[in-house]
Image (tube, rainbow, N blue to C red):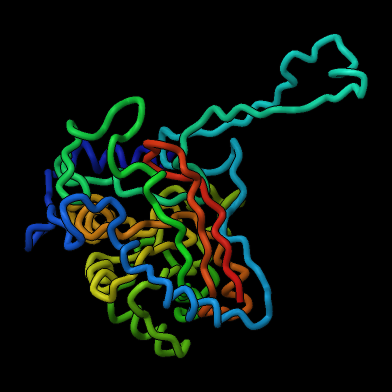
Length: 311
């Protein structure tokens, strides 16, 4: 509720502020029909190199559990209902008496661990590659930039352990990660960020879930505006964190969710939210094979995901 009120106040009372756009970001360098953005950096040769990082065969589930108690950006909610259709009053179906459970999801897709599709964030109702809201957004599903267009993301994953770098279990809300901080922690860990990578930040923030949801909801450490531009310049495919929004909150300026704008509509770089980075950080697994197949729900804006890290 605290975050709901905070963000509501920002949206209502903050002066309208538009980020400095610079070059014509509405035209993708991959052509006017492109719908996958930075995923164009994914190449078979990079998959082969990433697979060579697997030495121990250890796997890590990067998705958190998703349920009705999972903190979510308001007004999002989530609920599962279990039903036994057509089975009331009978022993089972057929001579073998087969019974079964089905489940119904009543909720928003943007809950828990999620990928933001390229149709999620815009600037004045203009989205990735110049797509205008009125031309492609429909209540029955996006006509362009839907989640079904996101290709399998198999890449080199890089974890930047900001909590360890700053000597804390949980990085304080409002702490921004820009190029200076990113380069410092990468150098300390002995890794470099390359074109085609998936970059994840570990802040310890997910450890607040179920323990201090009020604090979890009220703000977060995260990527700053200059840091977003830095990673885009490196050619990363996706940026994620163990936080609900990946970017720093409170924001660095009056521009609201400017990091989202830089990453998604301006550069086609996907955002991975609420990643379970703790086990990777505990093992100091700073490089790994990252594997993600996004649910191919036609016209969906986002996707509930459970990426896998393998090392």
